[in-house]
Image (cartoon, rainbow, N blue to C red; front, side, top):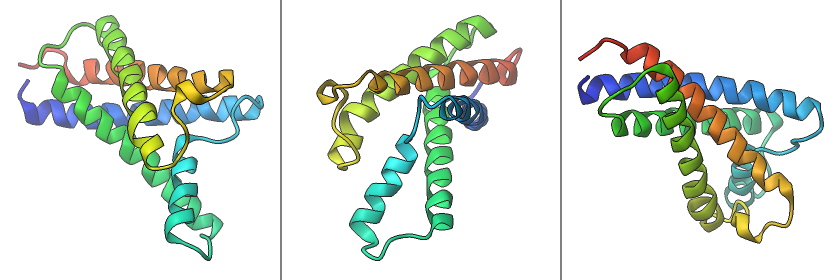
Length: 155
C-alpha cells in the first residue's frame, strides 16, 4: 500500500481507536478509577495560559474533544506511515499496542511536561500514572485491528 493509503487507513484507525479509548475511559470514570484525562489537562493548561476569564463548560468540552480526536488521528497517521508491511490482525494489534505505548512514553515524558500540563511519570507518586499506559495500549491495539482490516489484500 502506498503512503497515501497508509495515511488514510492510519487516520481512520486513529479515529476508531479514539472511540474505543473513549469508551474505556467512560467505564473507568464510572467505576471511580479515572477522574481527569490528558485532553482535559491540556484544556486546563490552555485556559490557565490563554483565558484569564475562564472558558465556558461547552468550550472546555469542545476543546477537550478536539484535542482528543486530533491526537488520536495524528497518532494513527504516524503509525500508518511507520507500517510499510502489514501483517495479520493479531500482528497489527500487537504492533499497534506497542506503538501506542511508545506514543505514551514520548508524550508523557516530553511535550506534556514541557507544556506544563503535568509532571513526567517518574516524578508522579501514584499508580494512576500507569492508567494512561493502558489507555495507549488499548488505543494502539484498536488502531492495529482497524488498520489491518482496511489494508488487508491491498498492495
